[in-house]
Each structure stands twice: as structure tokens, then as C-alpha cells.
Image (cartoon, rainbow, N blue to C red):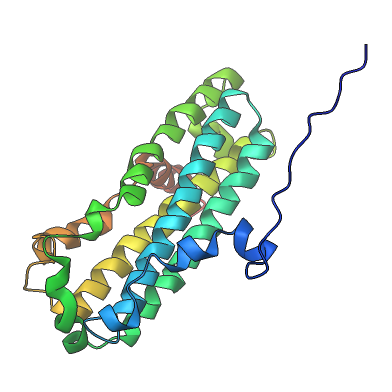
Length: 238
């Protein structure tokens, strides 16, 4: 017996709404910012949009990180690597997105900063989800190393024997590095706006925020560089 194809009803757009606008839900999306009449300062609209863009891209990043974890569990390294490269590109987009806030002067920021009350970037659900998901990839990767019977040193010393494992390890450190760069740029933006000896909008002292610059997801991948340098020295290569 042949199966009847499932009928999908296509909702036609109204005369005033294009397919493009309906598919992207533009009326809802563009209503999520303050109207011009509600703005406390000219730069407040930019501030809202920049941070909303962060949340949208971090939603996509979290989706990809969960997909990468699943692919690693399935030992599908090539597809996991492709998606991790996408994740890395997203973070570089966000570095440029953050630079938009540098077009705002410190005094202009203070004109509406009080409206943020105790809000802070660390409260971002998107960023918190990245902080939760990113370290989990390391456990998935270690399982693949164990399955291949290889150590972290092996995949660097014998990269030709373990090309995908080596490429994925390097992509992980690319991701870790761009996230460290993001934390550094975030700190410098805050310092540029409110100074280095003050307290952030969410109540975090700036010296405490500065310490986050050195946070990392995959310390083992940074430590292996020291071991490789030591080995090269022992073998008289340096």
C-alpha cells in the first residue's frame, strides 16, 4: 500500500507582509527594541541591538556545540570539525559586533547606564550556556583518544597518523583562544567605558573581571605546548 504524502498547508502572507518578513518573524523581531520615543539616549538603541545579536548568535553556538558533542559520541569527527569551524567563525563575528559599542563615548553610556540596574553581561543566558557546554567537548574528545589508543602527545608527535584527531584538537584550541580574546576585549571595553578602578554594572569589581581574561576551556591543550617545547629542547631542536 502506498503511503500518502503528508499535506503541508502553506500559509499565504497578507498583502502587507512578505514571505521574507513572515518567515523571519520580522514584526516580532523588530518590536523587541525600544521605540525611538522611549529611548533614554540616542546610543541606547545600538546598545540593545548589539546585545540582542550576541544572544542570537550564542543560541546558534549552543545548538552547534550540542550537535558537535553528539557527533563526537558517534565518532563522526569530520562533521564535528566542520561545525566547530562554524562555531569559531561565529565568535569572530561577535568580536566585530562588540566593536560597535566603541563608537559610544563613556559619558553617553553613563546617560542610560542606570537603566541596566544590576544587570551584567555575566547574566547572559547564552553566554552561561556556552560556559556550561564548551568544557564538555573535552570529555567527548578524550573518549575518542582512548578509542584510538592515542595520547594527546601522540596526535601532535604523529599528526600524519591521526590527522582528524590532530585537526580537531587544533580547532578546539582555536575556539578556546577566540573565547579568551572575547573576554579580554570585553574587559577592555568595560575599562574604556567606566575605568579600571570602578565597579561594573552588575556589581563586579573591575579587577575581578580582569581575572576572567585567563580563563580557559581546555587547559590540557595549552599545557601540551610546554611538553612539546621541553621535548624539542631535550632532543636538541631548540
